[in-house]
Length: 604
Picture 1 (spheres, rainbow, N blue to C red):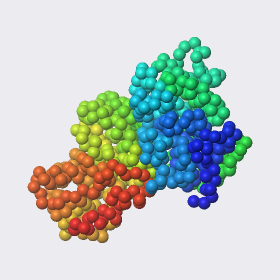
Picture 2 (picture 1 turned 90 degrees about the horizontal axis):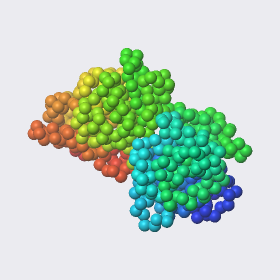
Picture 3 (picture 1 turned 60 degrees about the vertical axis):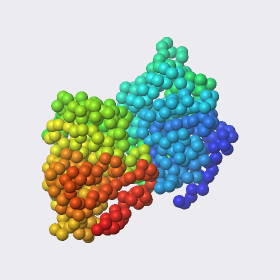
Picture 4 (picture 1 turned 180 degrees about the horizontal axis):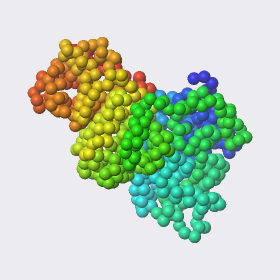
């Protein structure tokens, strides 16, 4: 990459600790400049890191990492932390194969205690660590931002921390935004605390009554000007007197996207995670470090993705049934529902970072006989396992789950891979799991799910292009369809979802049948048994984790029916996948087309 030598001007952590205020202030501008430039070359978590520059610098300056542990919830806010803990020279590799993680990573640096990518869990981890660390004089600090404090697990932790009087510093990075627009009563509480404290420098003890956090047993500090480096340093210096003695909260207001005007003004979340193309910027030293020379910005989302097809079809469905409800936990923009939510305020609700609540609330809606869809990422559905089992499947409620990003999450890595849902959902009775491979199948499955009167219905899809086929393969509930069929074929490949589109052009050149297992559960067992009896070799190709996959079911069917076919699974058999580009990661774990073809040809 050209013209990146200036990144080496960011000092080592030891040298950083020796800087005076003027040098720190100049460094804050350099860091912000580097983040903007980095966003020109790759998709990064931009606005949250722009807003946290001064806070991250202040924490590392006033405290002593790694002796004092600094944790970020969620870890996507840790870019500045990485740059100042001896990783600045590697920032160009962030989210690349064999590069830096986009989150904190214990494999990467002694300054990162753990690896975490989901919100809400760090307070619990920090408490367990703080209460059992070897040296009680050291500090444990959690920075919790992007509205992660609204997650239910956080309140379980706050309750226990306050009761135990665990000495933890919790920095609430209140930037008025979640991943999308901020929602919920907690947001309102923080706003009220901000407005009631804006004339006080450190604490609100002058108020006539305690606030929410003080009633829970926390020492509370507030700083309005969280992007003023001098005030951040002064406040943290004061907070240090308490942070390893008692549970302490620093409520700090920052501006998400600070220093980049378009990101500052973003109220929907499009600058949360993106690559900005065709961006020209100059550092304006006089206007609060603003990149004001902003020309054409290309950050539009493609319009032919699976989630776009889903949203457009739901729009049509609402014309038939305007009572439909769609629940989304804090991913309105990323899931493609932003404009839909604005057009259909009665039908759509973002409940914030609260996956468990979203699922159980949907159960309550379904009990009223109102059709309800839950739009949620595969990786975040993991958090709501009990709610699915106890509140939905057990009661056989027909909640529809629009399960997106069911794929490897190449940039984010192991914390976000959407490959485990089939394994844990199949362990729950009464779950209908499906996977469309094209536009027609998406629309047909939503129609079938809408008509379904019993059982949770899952429609899983990747964040990929959704092809619009000319020749539509008709199917009904529980059906599989042939994509390729050869009379002389002795071998077949069974797959589903977008893998069908990747396999089709390769297998069409071979005498191999390709079968689209649209229904991963609740399929017609007699039909599937008959299919397996026709072939000598059957390959079940799934871009999911190996345990409890469709292939396991087919092996059992073949065994129970004493079939002679040889069934081989091709899927993901490792938990250590990592992050990087699609080509490198797929090849590493043997799920790329070349590796799949080689395995098939070795047998036939």
